Structure formats: C-alpha cells, structure tokens
Image (cartoon, rainbow, N blue to C red; front, side, top):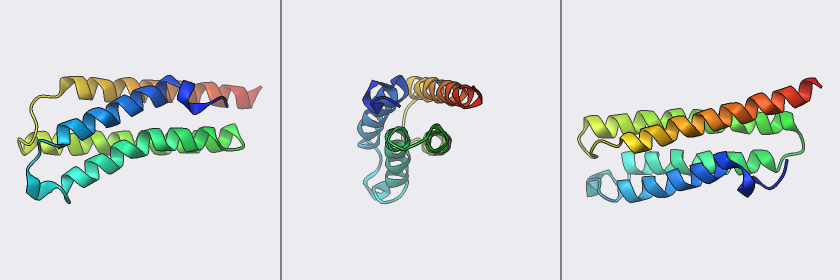
Length: 119
C-alpha cells in the first residue's frame, strides 16, 4: 500500500482525533482519567491502526488493522453518546457525521483490498 498519509480515511481520522482532544478539554476535571482518557485513546487508535496496517506486508494484514480501526470508531461513538447523556458535551452532530464518514471510507478500503485479493 502507498503512504498511509495519502489515505482519506487516515486524514479524516487525524482531523477527528484533533477535534476530540478539543472537545474533551471542556469535560469536568474529575473525568480526566475516566471517560476523557477512554475517548482520547479510542480516537488515537483509529488513525494509528490505519497507519500500522498500511505498513504491513500484505493486504490481509492491512484489512485486519482496518477492522480494528472500525472497532475503535464504534467504541468512540459509544463513549461520546455516554458523554452526551451525562451532559459533558453539547450536541456534536458534526462529530457523529464525521465518524460515519470515516466508517464508510474504511469499509470502502476493506472492500477494495478484498477485491484485490480475489484477483
């Protein structure tokens, strides 16, 4: 695979991670080692797994890391919904929209890589 920094999924995941850090700065201080830490770890995991997978030796391995990134996206979405329920954050429709967009990009990349394997 080419340089991970050229992948739209990686670029959008990086932007999402930056947004998550900005949003979580406003959370209660007593949550810094609780939900804030969990949310940030899940967010950082997304572009990290895309990058690591793209550096692997095979498309099969890359696909596995993309599935891990998908799992981190689902985890992040759940944690943000919990934060919203706890009223730690305002309505973040744009963040949830970005999550869906990244999910679609990753799913498209998985489909592309699986197609290459079948040829």
